[in-house]
Image (cartoon, helix red, strand yellow):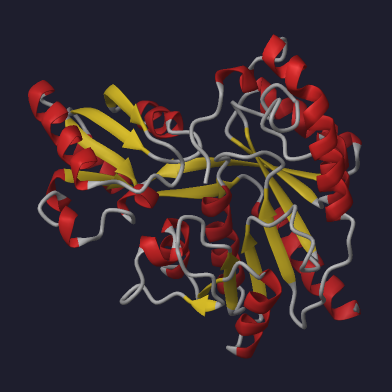
Length: 337
């Protein structure tokens, strides 16, 4: 779990980034060495949706899109993830009727609404459970830098506006390891939204011979229609809370205020009561993400439920055929092992 990213992570010329870069070189080298280790081979195709940085880029909406594409083609994919923010180590199959975000994490609950979902800190054990329960494909939400499981296809998700920040490695910047070697180990890059920072990563990926896809976040039309004419107080505890405000603004909704919380923030009743008071005082409507709403499902929040609007979104790729080619590549590589 991480808090808000330091501001200097987005500033290439920052002295703080330069000062911390020697530590980043060490951490990056260690991460690349770990990524080079051979992983366990599973009997079904394994697709990994990852990113080269920490923080939100759109991995979970992308995973949902991949699951949907596979299901539309007759497959029975399972989602596999660590379950950030949840207490269960797993492997366990997520059951939304008895598991909450405190047990399995918020992302797991979203994925379980689309396809069978396994939470496991041990990726290999989780993959084996998925196969035992009938998975034809495994789609990993995160885990690109984790070498324990052999991936047949890896798709790196890049936020078009944020790119890779200042291009430095933790703690000097948001990268988990140097960018070029990470791209070399991936099959494709998915650019989410427009922006020069993301376009630069796309150029690097094309030069490395990688597939580059473009996609956008599409908000739920019914929810947007219901918010028309209202001024909103948006709040989110995700990797980039400002993305919620941007999505609303681009859909024509006036965002009067944004309240940002750390990624996977475990909301308290006091947090929500404070937001309610602020919204009431300013005549604003409270809007959050579906991921955040998944963490507001306990008895302490029952009295607030009707006062908060969640904005569902979906990832929409511009070239569905290219995505299907990647999925087919995973099946061919798995079959050839």
